[in-house]
Image (cartoon, rainbow, N blue to C red; front, side):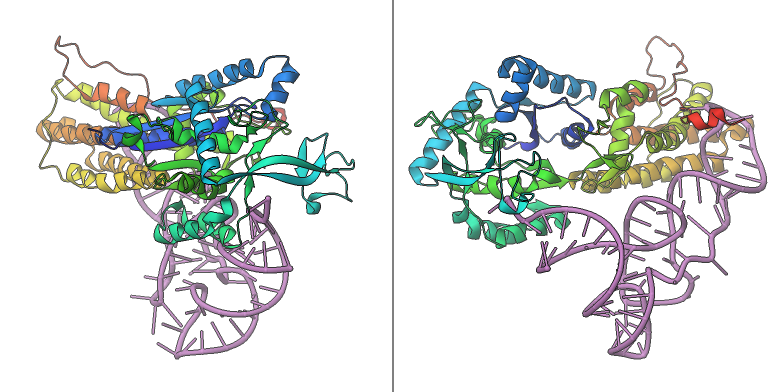
Length: 502
RNA sequence: GGCACCGUAGCUCAGUGGUUAGAGCGGGCGUUUCAUAAGCGCUAGGUCAGAGGUUCAAUCCCUCUCGGUGCCA
């Protein structure tokens, strides 16, 4: 018997360039959610992967003088390497060049051809041979290609169409019946209006592209990359219209597709329509997050202003990056990444608040607790209060409101710092040993609670904390060691201007 | 041009038809010493973009103006 697992997906990342912080963001969000659910003993499937077909990839590979597949192998490996660096635990990494996926795509195509949801037609458009792309009349600059400024030609190409228009009504009904299908709400209206304004059938094959999945019954066509890539969510779990793998039932329907806002429409319109055509249940939710700008600028290849996750990790550690990305900005909104803000938050939240709290308490625990693991303080008011926050924190994570969860957790950190100041354990040490122990016991348990809360976000830090919070469990009687700080304080960046001035 | 959304303390943002409009960060002042010179306390007097309207009462409702953003395959 199959039990349905909680199935989370990230988009498949296009292998036209090396991974940057934007890719990491989505995948980390998936990882945080997955870790949280696992900690509640909810079975989870997390799938990510790479999108490898299309003329762009073919072109890049040609420029580099390698076979397309070899190029894809390299970049795809870079992504997996980054997930490792970022401590992301996924269940399955799919590549659109995987034979099982390609077979699934072909079978889907044939099935829809048979049902009439895909039909052969021809596409007519204004084509620029330098761009290898079609343009609308409105996009042209003085009737020329907006990029090359050269004349475009009217070209017609045989292509297969998917009958997207047929699903206009069904999609609208679905949106109305499932108000959370497109999330967050403030991004959904655009999509709903778009569908309301009328859908046209879309081209789903190419005759000019060879690096793609061939249409089985007409191999001079390859399947258009979007159609190919979207299917991964199903084929990766064993979907094939000619016969599903038994695994498919435990994954489907997907619980949440995490996507960037730029591909929300593909996932909110085309993908559900494809599933309707296939008679497959729709995913429960598509959640679109925002973009990171870098120092206020859009990340772009031409500006070359990508932040490499590896560099940040190298200097500050994985957990600091994981923390920053989900604390700084409400998940869904756009945010700005700058080293200045990053350092500020690192020092204030991680080094000063949490790191120092942990350090001051662990020092006292080492000094004043006789290495005994204290009993859970049922009578402790603080501990009871903090414990009562857990459901709220969990709800926030499950609603993908990561920043809310972290904010609440940091209220706890702050509360504990205040409490230490109020109770002044260093004075109790001179006046009331018994009260001191009771207090430190409470604090140790509160820290365990915090460690548990931050675990999905900062798994390494959580385990380092846990290691020490087992105060006194040492069977051999060795005293607790003074541990290195969780987050060593970092100097704020010295600007060149500051040096010159004197 | 069409359709949405936004404009609240230096910065990032919460917020509600009704007593003195909030938080975090930064800044300023003070204070403790257990701790990573961290922590803790106090402090921001902001025309809630502007104008008009509805109302006993609007930052929150309506209209217009200005400024900004997104979507229109």
